Length: 112
Image 1 (cartoon, rainbow, N blue to C red):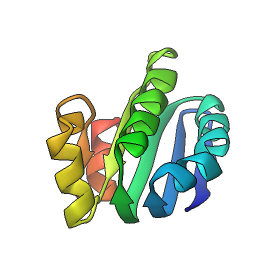
Image 2: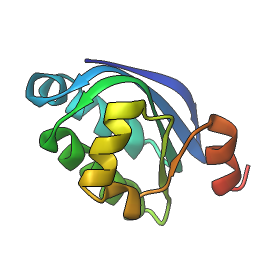
Image 3: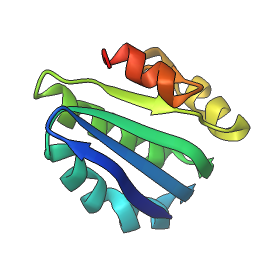
Image 4: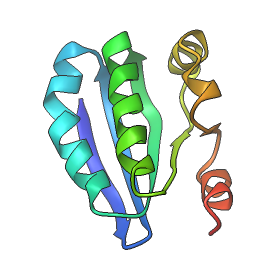
């Protein structure tokens, strides 16, 4: 699992995740993800290169959403591929967090 902060401004942090969001993957990125999201503003997490999402990965995303929500901001998930999208649906996380297909949709939701 790899994490890259693509954009970080006072009102927005955009993060790209790559690989498997399973136990080793979550262990590898959790601290860096939370640190990036603490920087402020809304969060956008691009899941387009995530190949697997376990229940621990779902927990990570819920924790990230709570972290952002405490500041009155929102977290949007972008472009989950097939199996990852299915995992989001099965866990009902897509009912809690906005999940969109493209970056421009995420930016529109956040008012940009």
